[in-house]
Each structure stands twice: as C-alpha cells, then as structure tokens.
Length: 236
Image (cartoon, rainbow, N blue to C red; front, side):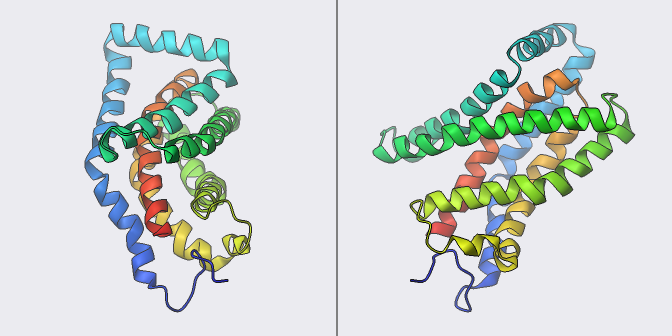
C-alpha cells in the first residue's frame, strides 16, 4: 500500500519545499513578535532591575526543580498552550475528541524534549563555558542550529509528528530514514525552523544558563503551532 509520506514521481517536489516557505511566511509576524519580546526581556534583564529580579526568581525555581522544571514548562508551552489556541482560534471554542488524542501525544513528547533540551544546554555550557561573549554565543548557536537541530531535533520531531498523522501505523515508516525523505521533508522544515530559532537561541545564549530554559518556553509555543501546521499540510 502506498505511503502518504513516501517520495514518489507523482509528488511535486516544489510543493514540498514551498511548505517550509509558506509556514515561515504565515508565522512571520508571530515570529517577529516573539523575537522582539525576547529581545526586550534580554535588554530589560541587563538594564531594568525589576525585570532582572523577576527573571532571577525564575532562575531560582529552575535551579530548585532542575529537570522537573524543564519537563513542566515544555509541557505547558509545547502541548497545553498550542492546543488551547487551536480550540479557541480554529475550532470555534469547541473542544473535540481529537484535542484529547493530540494531548496524549504532545504531553509526553514535549516533556521528554524539554528535558533533552535542558541536558543539551548543560552540555553546551560545559563544552564552551558560560561566559556571554560573542565567541561563546556564536559557537553555541552554530552547534545548536547546524548540528543538534539537523542531526537530532528536527528529524526526530518530523518522524514522530508524521507518524502521529499516519495514525501511528508502522507500515511504510522505513521511508523516514531515507535521503529522499530528509531532502524533501526535513530540509524544508529546517528552513522554517531557522527563521524562528537562530535569532531566538542567540538571545537565549546571551542570558545566564539558568534562565535559558524558562525563556525557551516563550518561543516553543510558536514553533509547535508552526510545525503542527506543516505536518497537517503534509498529511492532507
């Protein structure tokens, strides 16, 4: 049986590549707003003491809860908030059975990814140090966006979301691990990802390590909405 995500001669490659461009364009203004908000928080942290006190309180909570904070904040930002927005903005405030099934997938997924991101940020701090210098920040951004993202985060997210869209069927999933699938599905996703996350992680790495995960959650909701849109477009 043909797989709806399999690469075939009948699938227009231009449309697959344009999926990333369309998603990036559709989220251009929300992405700009989130980036501007985070830039504002970065500037306020260094130049406005009340904001610094509030963010330092978040950092203390993160230090106390450790990976538990990463799991819970990613759960809220990556699963709960996007699903609430889906209900309020796209479903006429009507809660459906599909929302429950979505949460059964997104809650454990984003809990796990939140802890993985936390572990990765700790590794980055160990590899390159915690100084907020241009050299250190540039190294962290390059490793984050051009090694960790294309080799792990983006493929794993693409595979699992597409597997969910297929009804969690195992038949035909071997296509996920082909060069054709990476070229036609993961690369377009990366193009949309970089437009949001290169500026975001540059801001994150400009903050103390304990603040990176709390502010990571601010941008995560936008990305999940963007990626869900792309995944549903491919499923159709």
